[in-house]
Image (cartoon, rainbow over all chains, first blue to last red; front, top):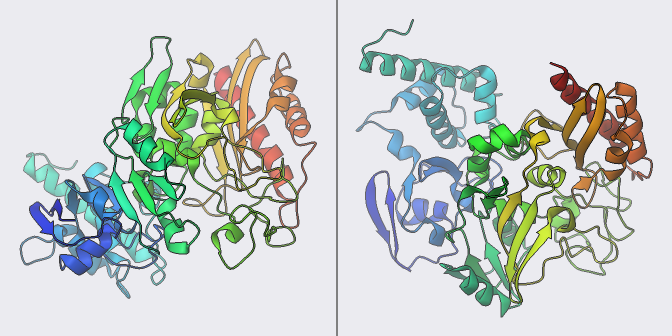
Length: 166
Length: 330
């Protein structure tokens, strides 16, 4: 089939796609977007997390045919121009990356969280990231990174709306 | 994973016809369980019919005061729906206690009901399993059984049903709407799932080609005070060791009505009829709750690794009822 869908805001087509292959495979192997990682392939680890119609989902569980006509956002879409986006910067600064395999999925999950919840509690952060498994860090630096990302998102929202974050 | 054909269904009758005529065809919903099975070799369909774009994505109030949930409504959307949070909090809590955000955003109402056991022997094609291949024998009998059943099991199968949502729907007496090769019918959710008996390969009473189109929640004012309590091996993103869905109607210190279902204890969500019967008319005290829980679990038959589930189920049920009674008193 010819798969037509939107990726990071741009209309994309991929040809000779088998409807049963995963969205993750299409992104990585056909569209040259290897940011989303292929780890467990079972929806367990969250390394392949992408936005699907605006909500995070495991790209390894979505058949290519199911993605037709839908909007996909990958970790590559979190960048700002040639630089890193604010969530990505937060992970670098907090030292939240070791081997890095889980990082793209965590970035998408974190982006979703800080967009939805202005000041997430630690419990909310843990619950929101429950579907993203990291086998290196023990999560402490990841927690730091998410808190940093949330603070920055909140303060940029506040400056945009002309208010201070009292 | 073996190759398969894929079709996207636009109409329910077309989907039913496409699956009904091919024994090796299956419906594809959110894929959170079936896609795993394709990769593990547990399922080897020749055709998948994608039903996620059928027009069953609404949550609507019914003229009789109930609520109809379309089969393709995503678990996350159902959990967040205001009418569910207000009138059936047990359902919202159960949904949010299941899986992870990424999975709840994919999983559908119909698919959640039809997900299959996470018994490790069922999911491992190198070990015998009567549910996967009838007649092979049960590897869990005498094997690792921490997550297995304590009620209603058979010598052929000791697996548990994994859904949290289904436990809440069981306590609420929901009705499942099905359309299939022989027409439409309604099935009480309490009768949808089966005990294993000597046919453990049949999880439900559905026949090949039957498609769930909606789930109705009855009007049930007492469900506005209802809870889901889940005990698991880690704080999030784990299947239940034991769970309790309950609603309690107390007046002047006496239980008028109770609705209780247990998860993680049987091949199906376990409606606690015995406990409910024991509670009707009883004083809303911890002693009554304990006696009701013990009556429900009197027939429990733990296997090698799960004797802990009997006191855990009892204590979780008592704690849930105590919390609900405390809510009533305020």
